[in-house]
Length: 147
Image (cartoon, rainbow, N blue to C red; front, side, top):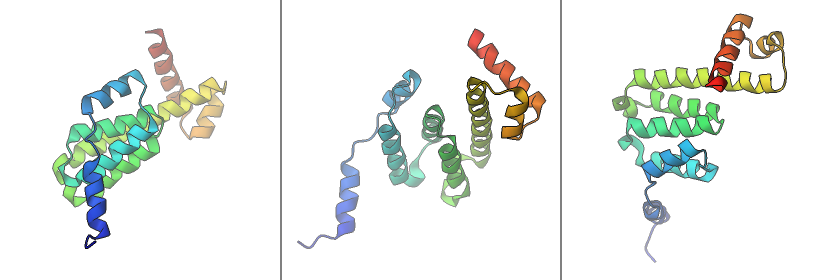
């Protein structure tokens, strides 16, 4: 037919509709977002490559975090930091996002261990954190529940 496979692949990607940013943000807020929607959004950002905006990066990271996929969020942000084409996003902001994601990951892990009725000492041993930090995070979690 005289058409290359790569041309067909490019055309198929272009046929995919652009994800609705507001709708995804609302679904994230309502906790109704699906894994497929997250993966489709990631594919969309990958195709968009060096034309993505910081707000899109933050949304992608938040989607990973809300679905307890913090390791993927960190990997995604690390890829952006190491990519010279993404310098326009601001390396400092991306590093801040990684640090915040790591902090949230710690909280999620401690929350899960508290639900499993682990003691402070056990949590400290499992996570490698100091007991005082575990207590501080536990108190933050309890304060959030009371609100």
